[in-house]
Every structure is written in C-alpha cells, then in structure tokens.
Length: 252
Ligand SMILES: [Zn+2]
Image (cartoon, rainbow, N blue to C red):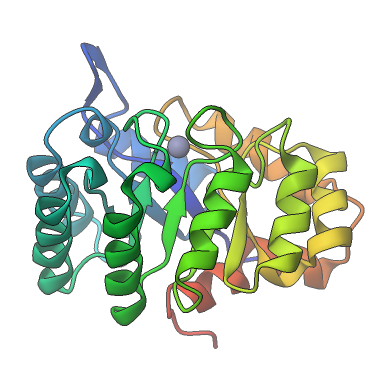
C-alpha cells in the first residue's frame, strides 16, 4: 500500500540539538515504506522565516518528488508575512503552508485580517494549510476550525486531528466544517476508529511528526492506522489517497 506522510519536520537542528541529517531522514522513510513526505521547518517557527523557507526548499530539491516542502510565515508581522508567502508561492515549488500557532505565539483570532489574507492566497494557489492543533492556549482544535470557517475555499488541515484531549472535537469539526481535514498524527487506535466513525475516512490523512525523532515514530504512528478496526479502503484513503488528492499528485 502506498503511503504519504503528511506531517514531518526536516531541519538541521532544534536550538542547539542536532536533528536527523537528510541521509538518515531518507533512510527512515525507506525503512517505513513512506513514498513521499510533506516536510516542514522547525526552527522557522522560532526565527525569521525567510532563510528557513529557502533552506527547506534546498533540502527538498535534493530528493525531488519525495519531499514536498511547506512554507511558513509569521502572521504577527502583518503585510510582511503576506509578502513572504507571495515570494514563496511564486517559486512554484512549495506544496502547502504550515503554522504552529502555539510555538509562533499567536491565536488565529489575534491576527485575523492577516490570516484571512494568507488563507485566501493559499486557496488561490490551491495549497493546503496545516496548523498544529490540540494544544491550548493558541492551537486548540476549536480555534483552527474557526479559522477554516473564515475562508471556506481554503483547505485547512488539523495537524494532529485533536492530538489527544481534542480528538472528539476534531471528529465533530471535520464532520461539520466542509473545508477542514484531519492529519492523524498522535491519535491512538481507538481515536482513529472514532475519527473515522464520526468524520469519515475521506477527510483523514496520515502524519507522523518524523524528523523530531528517529524512524520509530513513523512505525508507531502507522500502527495506529494499521491496527484500527477500519476497512482496507478506509486505510488506503488515510495512508495515501486523501493526501494525494490534496497535494494534486497523480492518482493512478
Ligand atoms: Zn509537527
């Protein structure tokens, strides 16, 4: 079965701690049979975003087709954030946008006009926008779902489908908000079954957070999908097809 990992971080370091180098990152993907991975920055959520967007693009270019880079910007900067987004979109090489509103220290409602402009630009470019979710005070699942409602033609992804405490909220919001999807990155086996039952498998996507730690996290998170009591068709949708559709990859 083909697998797309929709949530990974490919960066050189977390503060002073080195992260996996790219060779180890690719070896981890191979070992866990991951065909393609959406890659995000990590230090770009803490520092000036532009150099991190450029560095991520360079890394992704070393493994063409397998690593799909996502942009990040700092919405607290207002117009400057929109300009940086435009600059990245103009390269034609990014496949989505990622926010970690908790680490980036904004509630979406605090930067609403900027966030609406960003979501509109992303919708125009047909790029999915993934937010970290499941964590108060800035990244609750309710807050991300609210932002999705501001721009109904933007495709917004809950980066952790509720993570732990917000899984049932994620299930309800994905069911009720048409342009909201869930990246199952953290929820356990019973949670996955609940998400599928309430929200439907057609709006769920697999993700692992690989890159923050070694390949074992991929295997662990894949087990939540592999061992859930869902049909093989639902599993195929979550592991590959839904992501392929959102990323406009060939479906044959
Ligand atoms: Zn992450």
